[in-house]
Length: 310
Image (cartoon, rainbow, N blue to C red; front, side, top):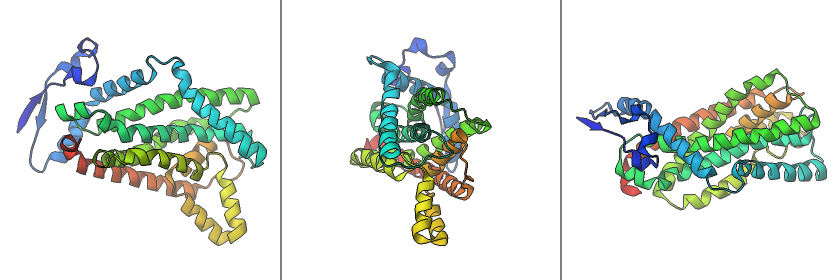
């Protein structure tokens, strides 16, 4: 069965004049028994321009008609850095990684965590917030939560100016490891997209999840090594429980996908003096990929009923 479909520009919230000519061409949707997966990924590629349009729309909506503009992307991470530096660095006296100033160590973890938290929150609400679009036109629904993550990525890039400013202030310069940051950003996107797809599908069916997600984000900030170094956790476990059991429990702690992302960012930015825990990083990477696969599978299984449920 073949269906000719032209994307409805008005539903996207972008004027027709702003659309590129390519979006006005007719696309043939093919519905064949046993070929749904292959055709779905083909359609996902075909609608890449819709992905860009939705992402651009979300960015414009986020910053349009705000008195502070892009400053909102700086205020929250900056306040978190100041508070955690004072409480954990000055009052508690926790050590920093690699001899770097404590503020830079906290900043190197706050940036990926803030990206993850914002991406998870926006992705989980994306399908519900686009209910009119979901119920009126066909397109691969995965585009909606994926495009919402772009907003968090823009916030992340703006907030990176805080890290640059701290490095200039403290006269602290990174090493060649900084060139690994793009790969770590991709890892952070994967860490957010997998759980984001699961929470998106659950939020469509159970609206209570929109109340649970802020709690998950708030609790996760203290579980992840944002305000402190993961080395503090490892040293404490080894000291209290012995080297064998302590290292095993730390590997269990490293299963948290954001532990690997945060430690990777600190390794790239700070150039930690002690050996990087590659075993824990690989475990974290493995769970990130597993959650991404499970997220795609669960989202694909439930998205067919989105239009009816929403």
